[in-house]
Picture 1 (cartoon, helix red, strand yellow):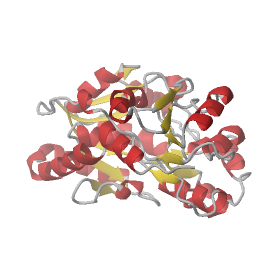
Picture 2: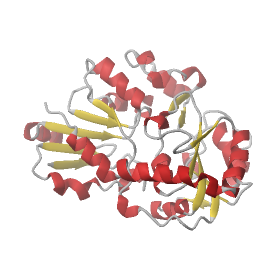
Picture 3: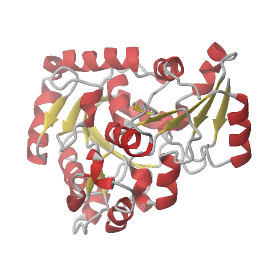
Picture 4: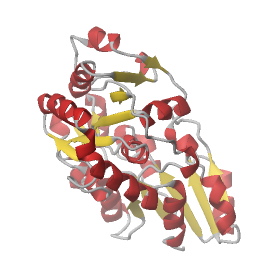
Length: 328
């Protein structure tokens, strides 16, 4: 077995940097298989030819769907139109289904999978110093409102940097939102330490699209058959975030914004592993209730943690990908 890894093109210090798939290669060192990992790992024609001639199974761990289709070139690579891979794992179940139906004659090449975290990075999560956090970029009005809400509690707001903020509509209060930032460009390990010390996490599993994104999506064959693109008129699409795995494994209570897709339900159960909210007004009351009475909700935290520890760590997901591989 060999790994082809190229992280160029990924966000700096992003979560996938710490998947640590390399640790588990030795379990399958004699396997007739190549494993591709990283945004640009498949952009090496000579290596691809060598892997095709040497191995009967080529697996691609693809973390970029459905946002890969915001451009024509990357979408074609993400869909594996030249048939390089026997298996492609993606974070979007609807885009996996669409790729299988439209491009692969209903074959089960594309399969949904969560972002994993390696068990070696798990931390003691018993000291909850912070009520809530927001981390990432402000990409839509929902995000700006969420930041305003969490600022009323004992909070942290972590972002890579303002240059990554790209709202899909004009936000008049963006300077106010920026004023709530507490941390810029923290190392992932520093961020995880804060997460392990936090009680609840609001989660928005949604992309906020620009007009150019919508235009490019509509250039793809039978785009309208992808359930991920049923709300392009609202300029939104689903995207399951790494925050889901992080929240579960760092024992934060997941407060998830209900949306038209609710992708989280492919892996976690509402009411048992997380709590939905339907509006940001509801979010404020929910944060107040859950942070004040966290013991009442601890069984939900523990259920999500147990499920993630058993099924969604790097080792568990890598084993599943290898065990379920197909051959040419």
